[in-house]
Length: 106
Image (cartoon, rainbow, N blue to C red; front, side):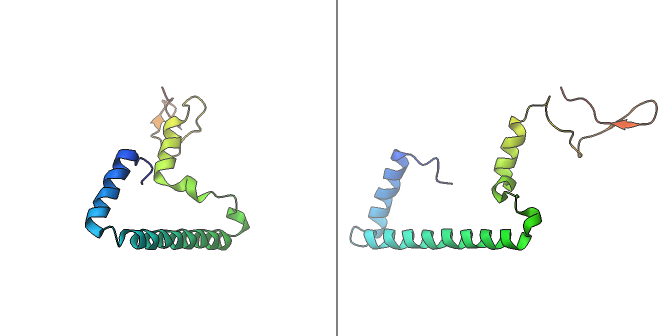
């Protein structure tokens, strides 16, 4: 989310916070925001651990981060069509013998 935030944007946000919140309250607000962020990260880590535990050993190898739509889409876009596995959702074509087949990828 904030990974594309650079120095100019950070400076603008800092100056905006300085004007809106004020210089006397800015350190305490930043400290509270930092502790809230740490709490959220801890809770997400605990939920992830609980989910992995509940899924059991059958799905212990499952990487939940790989199921995020952004990473899933990026992985499939970078996939080499020649070595890609046949997609079950790909459209099929009928041959004259009546056997369905998946069309070759170009």
